[in-house]
Structure formats: C-alpha cells, structure tokens
Image (spheres, rainbow, N blue to C red):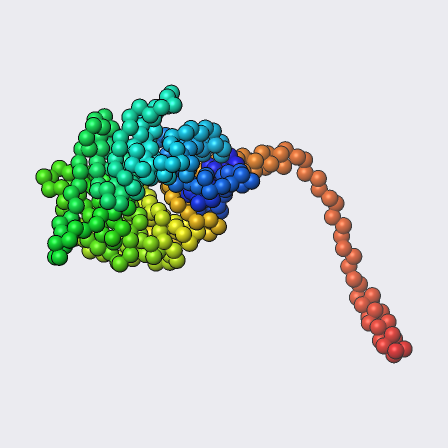
Length: 378
C-alpha cells in the first residue's frame, strides 16, 4: 500500500466511501479502504491536503468525520469528529497551518485546533450552503454560498460580520425577483475578484474592492445547472461543468465561450485545473476520471473507477510523474551494476574447440551411391 500511494497523483472520493488513487504514469487505479465495511455513511464528500508537502490527505465523510490519510504510508492514521450527521454533508474542507476549517450544508462554518476537541470559531453562513472555498493567497479568507444564500466572504480573524456580502441580481423584465443558487466559486489570482457558477446556468464575477455588490460580469452557458468550476493557471479563463456532462472554457474578460471539452456521459461533480500544467481533471456520475488538455482540448487520459465520484484532488507535481518511479529506477540500476561486477569478477573458462571432420571427396560419392541403391530397392 505504501508504494501504491506514492505512485498516485490524482485522488478521488466515491459515493460508496472508497478513497481512490490513480497513477497516470502506470495507468492504474487503487482503492485505499477496507472494502468489507463499506456503507453510505462513509461517503466521501470533500478532500483537501493536510500540509504543504502533500504527505497527508484529509477526507471528509458524510457522517461528519474527517479522516487523515498518509500518502507516504498508504494508510489512514487519524479520525476526528467535526460535525453531526443531522447537520448535513461537508460542503468544504480547508487547512490554515495547524487549524482545520470545515463547513456543512447547514451553514455552520467551524475552525478546529489540533489540540482541541471543540471548535475555536463557529460562524453561521446561512442555510443550504453548497460550497465553501478558501483563498489560496490569504488562507484566513473563505467564501461560502448556496441555495438562496448569496456569496459571502469571511475573514476568520474577524468572524463577527462577513467581509463581503453579494447582492442579488436585479428583478427581471416582469419585476419578479430572480432566484439565486451558488453552486461553486473560486478566488481569481492576482486580484480581489471572485467567480461563481449557479444552478441557473450563470457565471458571475464579483469585485469586493469596488462599491458595487452585484456582479461586475454576467455570463450564461447552456440550459442546465452548473455544478463545478475551476480556474486555470492564467486566471483569465474559467472551466465550468453542468449536470448534463458538458464542460466549457469561458473567457472572464468578455464572458464568451472559448471552447468545449467533449467525452463525458454523466453529470459533472468536480473539476480541478492543475497548478502548473495546462490540463483539467473532471469526474462525476459516469464513474470516469478524465484529463483534458486546455491547449487543444483533447482527451489525454480516461480511467474507469467503478463508483460514482463526488470529489477529486490533484497533486502539485507532474501528473504523469510517478512518485516512486525515480527510486525504483535507481534501485534497478544499482542491482544491474552489482550483477555486472559479479560477472566481471568470475574467471572465464574456455572450452577447447574441436575441429569438425572434413568430408573427403571419396566419402561423398559413396553416400550418393548408397542412396541410389535404396531407391532401386524400393
């Protein structure tokens, strides 16, 4: 299990409670759990890294438990209760140093210390929270949003009031209130802006630094609810996916569709762009992990994982570089060198070569005459 976990560069959580690791270099998938004791209560709903070295993986399950998985040892090392099943599933997990940040569907946002069994900070972010995301630049900032719960940005050092509260869209042409349903969000790098996708196939960009609390950019894609989004390394585009298995690349400057990624057959549950490579990983109800290129939009990898998938997490290293591949090749080279030294130290034994008998010119006609006699007798 230790060698397998080091090979994996993509991690996924399934509805059956199985943590799955995929090695793209070997094109193999591994299950890291006890398959004899599986239940729907252990359904994996959230994943995040436990440390910057990516040696620990935090797994949030449906029953409110956060389990720690060691990618170096290949086993679960710790489990702690961070919520009750009545509060709903996890809508987000994050870490800030030695602190753990959790958020449930009921809207309770908590901060846990490593040496404490009770939450240090508890915030009520609203009802029916669909997603909680942490800012990659300022880890004390998190964003929340859900069904009839607009985008809110919180500063965990000052949890009394949200730092930013988005305002709903203006009424439509019939003067009717427009519903809001934030399904996912992300912090745009090198700016204060936040991009969200909604259950009404909308993409919104908010700018907390401006006095305007409504979106500064509105765009629509398709006719089906959007479920997930992710930002490539550049920050000028966003990848969104919907419930029909459609993935598109949108330009955040103009709000136009740049292209679509094909090949999916079920609703998209999770998307993530790699931090340094121009690729995006997707998973969902069709039980496949897919890696698409953002440059030519072609499918690079496709792995069947047997279970419906809820979430995924990419390693920051090269996805096709196996973690233990280098050590294995170095070990094999050492073994080869030792074998060569052993063979070089052995003495060479030369066998005396026997001169083959030369056929005389007299023997050849005798054999031919014998063959003719046999044919005459037949």
